[in-house]
Length: 344
Image (cartoon, rainbow, N blue to C red; front, top):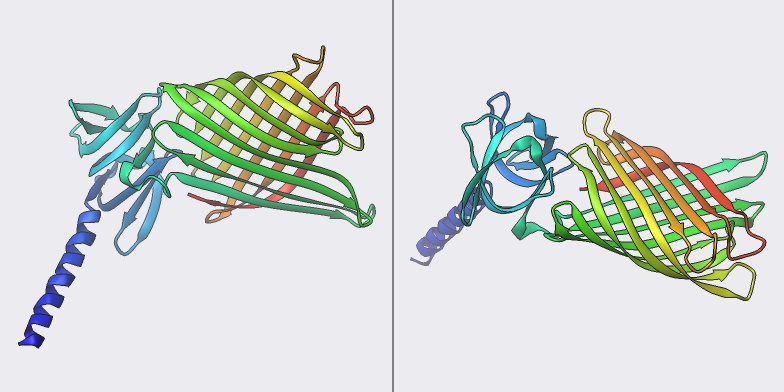
């Protein structure tokens, strides 16, 4: 009798497990060639759909290959023009459109106009992404070695985008440290309306070439996304910040109030070879030191060689026409070949 109850109970357990697994993968994607895919939509970002299928794991394909799709889960959706929706999907009889069910009805959305899509109940890990890079150069003739390391972690939720970035560029000659540049920053963007955000940033940096051991900065800005689609994202930022600087090799520090005028551009191409380019230029007019002006430029270009691994080039240029140290250079720049790993 006990054995019989055990078998019945075990069979019921297997049935519940099967039903639970099946219930999790009830999303449907109809391909432009009319193939029907059953599985689970994980997310959509940069024009790439991550879709988990039984037996195949998570596959990725471009959004332009999707005719329509359906899901009973609730998603956060960001459109090309900055409008956001929260709802679940149903297929549409109109080519390249999807029906989104909202609390007060439904709308037909153009598939190509969807920029981001994340399931609301699974938002932490799927909304997190990152890149880690290393670069090394050595010249025997000059006996100069340079080591570069950098990375970033991103997180998105309904109203906020947060990013932590760090980088370190160290140059050594004959076992002697000749220069060092280190940057660490936290940036937060909070959605106001459509493509308008308010930004907050906290930064810490050091640069021996520009003559300061430490600069601590905090600021706020207004951000507008001029371009937002699944290949390109570009935004401008205008704001103000305050910082304190400690001069390199000198016993003094200074406090500064600065403006901010910035431009950030990101390009992504998924087709072989996958290309990822980010370039940023920030200009800081100084309000407390008459005539002082700082400019920071950054370029990171990568090409994927195997899944999630890239090779690329990292370039930076910093300019300060009135550095805090009287013996400092006005400019600092560097270029390094990097090897990177990215996730999500």
